[in-house]
Image 1 (cartoon, rainbow, N blue to C red):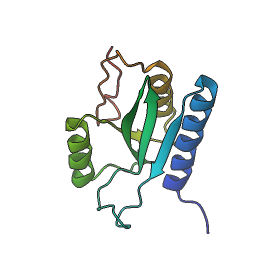
Image 2 (spheres, rainbow, N blue to C red):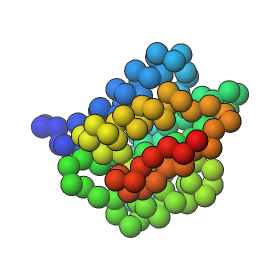
Image 3 (cartoon, rainbow, N blue to C red):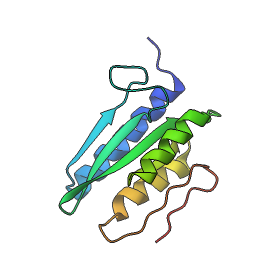
Image 4 (cartoon, rainbow, N blue to C red):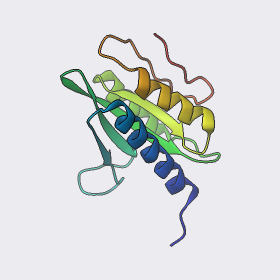
Length: 129
């Protein structure tokens, strides 16, 4: 079966996470959330990343898009709920280099004392610290 643009974008994000984790020696767990699958409702972000920060695992919800794809209102609502509960949430266009650079910088610089804000609009994604 041929890979879709979104599946290629997801693979780029997975490889980026693996590379940064290996270089920094950070334990992590990346869960792929199959929408509509057992235990996952429609609108659930594509990945949940548990990134080790100090003695805790920081949850990061990632919705992956490709091309001109945009998150649905339900996906944005669920990301908002995740963020309200203390997770970080991002929409990453995996075929868009600036988004991959953003995610890499986030993963390389995150420490337990940083105040990090994720924005939904890819044109506005920025780190504030």
